[in-house]
Image 1 (cartoon, rainbow, N blue to C red):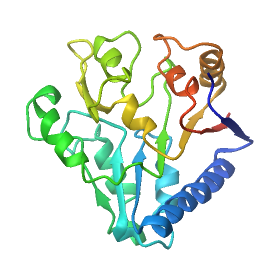
Image 2 (spheres, rainbow, N blue to C red):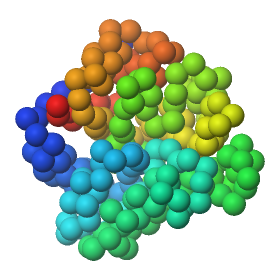
Image 3 (cartoon, rainbow, N blue to C red):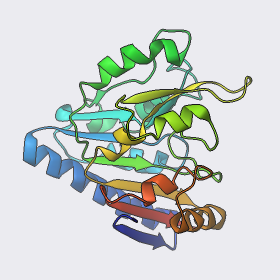
Length: 233
């Protein structure tokens, strides 16, 4: 069964960012008003950078807002590949400098070994989160839920009660930690952000059927959480 899906398509990335910032701040504000604190899972990569920079200048009770990434490469937080570094350098600045950040990276050599510590840390997050922001790859992956991996199949299993899951790809790929599908769905709303016709074609294919080849389809074929697409060419 396909979830309540709203598609918002924009003529420019600038217009998209303006609207997405407004809706994101609104979601966080409602959380703060309803329970005195708010939480959001954040996408990595380059696409949300302008959004995070815009958010950092908004007036909010930021000290009661909790952030965690949807996924993380198992690298030091100072690495250029780290989502934590991106978030700290863009979002956790200016007026938003006092937010609470929960890292998906521990001191363990491997995400599998570090999973228990990260799980314990994630219990600080107010659930359900007010918002999950996700990107999508051209292979249909979201967070670090990549197609055709045994680790992904574990992570998208709705019987998996873990908050996060270690993801191993090919030997030369940096391992990762990702939120499980259950964690991504334990939210009030999901915003999906990506650009370009190729990704839109993948998204439209995923709307047609749920398949392991396109992990994003698991978000689109559930009836628990509303999804809002933000897309520009």
